[in-house]
Length: 81
Image 1: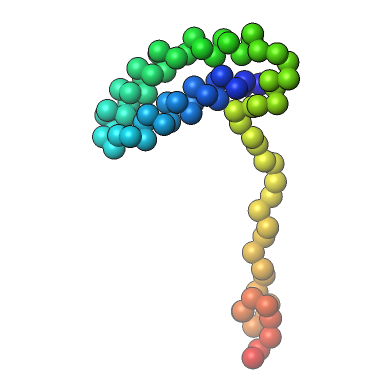
Image 2: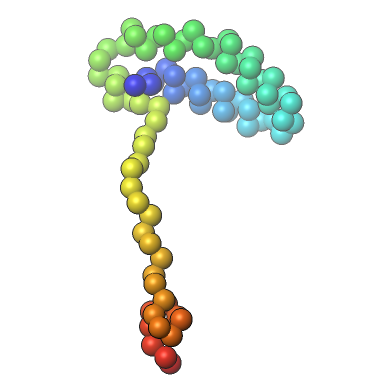
């Protein structure tokens, strides 16, 4: 499980990247910030167990509803009229 400090690191990097539009500058900023704050993720090991209630990711497993099928008339919902 990814803990709250890892989530905070992702948020900090995304926040600072959002200030710049130049893709090269954003890439450099991403590398620099990642190198500076990666050791902080090990602070998750020091947190109490109830900190597992703050994950950095949420997943949904589901299925998209299928589109309505056309009837013999070629239009969804049916009918000739």
